[in-house]
Image 1 (cartoon, one colour):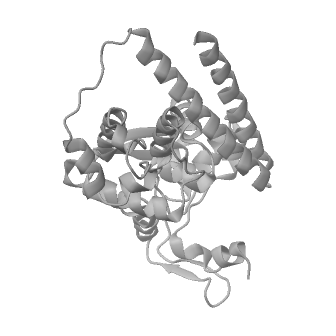
Image 2 (cartoon, one colour):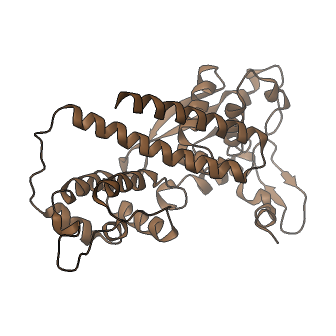
Image 3 (cartoon, helix red, strand yellow):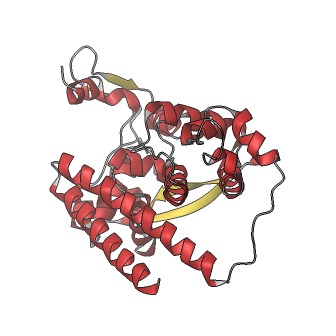
Length: 307
């Protein structure tokens, strides 16, 4: 049994949604329609859901920028409304999406999908009995939206971009991709410290002023990405060190470094999108990825022209 067969087995068990046929005639980009279809799968018989942008991007295999652009178009054309709600324990906010096109008064059709006894037939493991669509709405939202507790859904790319940019300047080892071990370590560090990304940036600034960590020792040992993230002791040890970070550089230098970092990040995104492009069979997704790659290349050319 291949991967897709495993996913499709019991396909309704993780929730579902209903999309009106007239929706496909709407004046929306293919990207926006794809995102709205995805959001509707979270709504059950209701019209609200709250998957994070990271979750949407991961499941649809598109960039977060594409997600933001698609949601923006949907909002501007009044297909959705967005409310912000505080997360548990008051840390951050999350978007609550109301899919306006699913409301009965959005169009002339009034879809009767809020039945009290909805079932889908399939094999023994692919049947679903729902008592009221509100139950399914809860299943859909709760199953996938706890992004902080699911390391597979988190976006760790910023850490890799920051490290690889630092490693290039100091001749250090660079991970080629985010492995399962790296993902596990980062998930643990973020769970312990919600400001870990900020602390990680400070660590890199201090490391630049600590020759020992850059190979100037009797063993020629050099700090690695995994060393920094594998436990909370290593990076805290560096944070506690008292170093003087040079600040007498011309004002243009930080801007140049920022642009260089953006170029590195965009090149990383292009590489990732090219890998997705080679894997996908969806013509719509291919079009989205090709557009993303072209936009990234144009931005790289613009940034390089300013350096």
